[in-house]
Image 1 (cartoon, rainbow, N blue to C red):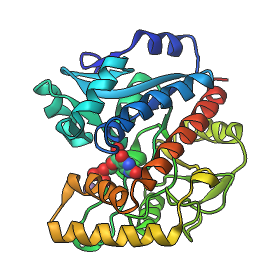
Image 2: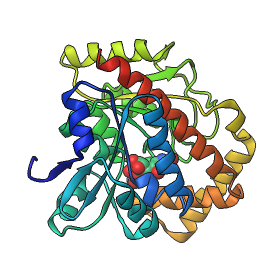
Image 3: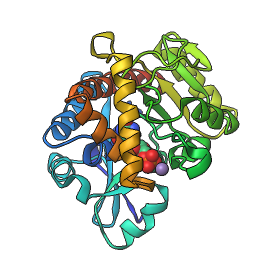
Length: 303
Ligand code: PSU
Ligand code: MN
């Protein structure tokens, strides 16, 4: 791995000096949001992590290396190139490295990079999951298998209702992945705070979460943890409007015959269009909120 990983000096120093570090993904930059909001958000997320006294490490594949910690030009490049950048999950990593292509890392690929760099916590918007209709299509995100095996905790705003929440929870249970709710019993559904599904455990503060992570890994229980942090109340979207937009996006996906790795970016863009940009505002705010919580947990992880 060491030949293919390039960790930013600031991140190496933080890790060596036992300072808190938070990993950040880049698919959300290239495929999850439009330019220039994606750039502004990526920079803001890093600023939020710094404001909480942690070091941000945004991850991407550039010029034959897995880069852990990007500079401003690199983030700008990913934001401007958008969908020209290869959405890179576990299976895509070797090809992207071989041909020195530019790859934006999904949750799965970001976890792989974070683990090899020694970063234990990572913040994003939403994780991939079991898609609606997966009993026919078999469309299950590689993020779930990664959570089953890689020792990195992921702070997200729950599971987006473009997915089948019930099946995603069943899958995570089978794979032994704890789903924790931050100050909530209920699994948040990304744009909304409610979903009708329960998390496994409600957690009261960052220290309790950090202590649980330490115990999990100290007892040899490999794999990740989902930390579900509800979108702040003022930025939550109306459930009915959201569900309608999602239904319509799913119908359009089927009509257009969109499959595989294109599904998630297609659905995200459609939902944004159908809510006239409202979903983007809430998306940005929930990511910032997750970065803040991740940094706070990171501070207790080093103690
Ligand atoms: N969910 C979102 N925004 C995103 C993603 C998921 O709300 O940007 C991205 C993440 O990078 C996630 C990926 O890892 O989509 C999942 O894609 P797939 O379903 O193809 O595995
Ligand atoms: Mn998929």
